Length: 257
Length: 359
Image (cartoon, rainbow over all chains, first blue to last red):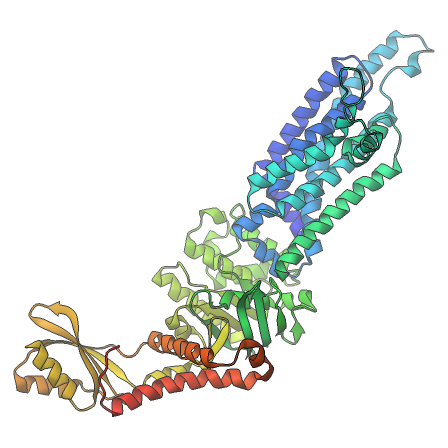
């Protein structure tokens, strides 16, 4: 597992894909941060994190599309399959490599908060002693947001890896991943569509509940308000577990075809 | 070292391997031979744990590949049909990765140097695999199989796509490996097994049709000899004279012509050399002999006939379900060698009867 982890991590940076991913992620996060926080003159980062999760729809497939599809296409997977490594070890090695690059991007994007802290510091200096503590971003919101972002990534990377293991074409892996991850993140938004009378477009409350329950974004909201939601943590980790498990099964099944 | 017992593999309704059993002793080089699609790769994939069998057992050094795959895989170095190379890595990086992947506990630097030296990769160690030629890539693939010094090495068509010089190099390399390792290689080239292997296992349509020492197969075919002669003279008369020569089992005129000479193929029985007699016979008749060469019987012929024989006898056998119950190790062994000798025998008998026939 260590060997595969190291190899994958390196190959992200031998190929341009790792740099492209990190570059796009950092630029996207900076742009989103500018529009959702800085230019709208707010200290609330909830909008920023929400949009960033939506952007993951496109970004995560960049990380995961090649992981298994390329091995299959290049016929290199036989090397991994005949090596004394378990299938679980192989899948986890690749998973953690993608997760590491992802986490690096998320931590890098934390630079965005530095200008915000300067602004807050400047504003605090201008106000009276009593108001001072109410000014500036809430650390809990930011920490919650970053932790949730990591958790969402952990779940979605597993989804992307699973899809990559189904095909030998990177492009179709990417397209299908975008579709599936997009559906998983944005499905909750359907519940917020209203018609002309202000009635929800989906009439049945229970459908809205279910959609919100399934939605990745729906679970996300609590974190960005600084609430640590154990149910959501469990939900994200379950998704990661289920899809990694399925990926192992894909390989197991191919042995038994 | 390798034991395969009653291996059956079905892909859906297609039967890729049907009750295949054979063993390979330590230090032996065994060639799996068969036409394309005979089940060689399937057998190798099962042996290396890539694929599961429908039923049957594959053991490496007493370790069952299915029940203890990690331990069994440590004993194997495998070169698939297409070498599993990462084009973005340098040769050295790649071999290091293989070293880590196999969890080796040798002196890394020294061991990898040795492997590189054995397959003569030293001068390209720092180059990206994507820039290497086919021959070098194949060698990197072999090097990969050698990393960790496994007891058993399995090569799937190791010389496909190489030029003649590289083929010889790879064969010598495999010969060399065979001294300290157990080697199984697959090929559809008879000359290859003949050049490299101690023993030949012929597979056709998922079944073993022959399992013999290489020398015995060679001996089985040396019973008859073939010559090609170019003779100036009236074709019908020449052919008649050739056919009537003592010791000649078969003679036929070939379409090929060389100036005013016609080409003829001769086949003799019991390894008789009729070249001198032929010369005097032609001199007597006043026909000029402008070319004569011994072509010998190639293993290709034997192989094809063994395969055909097994197909015919296979058709006569009971339906599969009934067969499996009574089929054991011996039956497999019976069919195989027997087919070879039958073949050689029938040629001899034909020759003795002085029969001529068209192929």
